[in-house]
Length: 67
Image 1: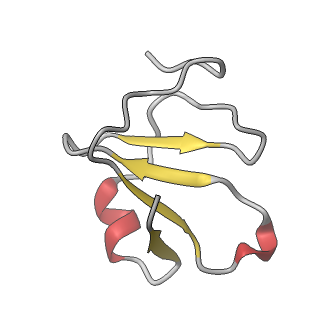
Image 2: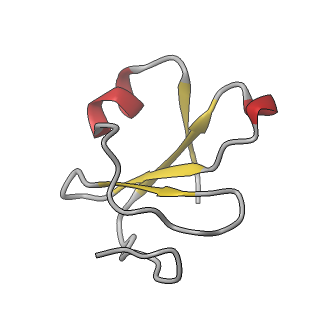
Image 3: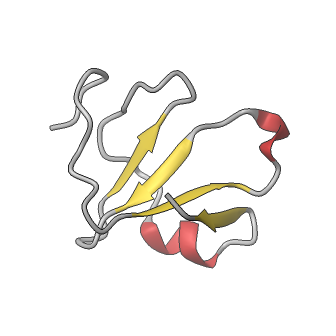
């Protein structure tokens, strides 16, 4: 399990950020097995997120970014 001090394995993951970055949110990472991890702006990691990979991929609120 991911803890604030332990980064998940992001091999092959795709990163997403809010289109409106003025809100100052972190980065969401979707791994190949469709698990979503959130990294806060401070660098801390949260446990796997309740936001689905489909939500991040299909919503105009989020944009894919190259790592």
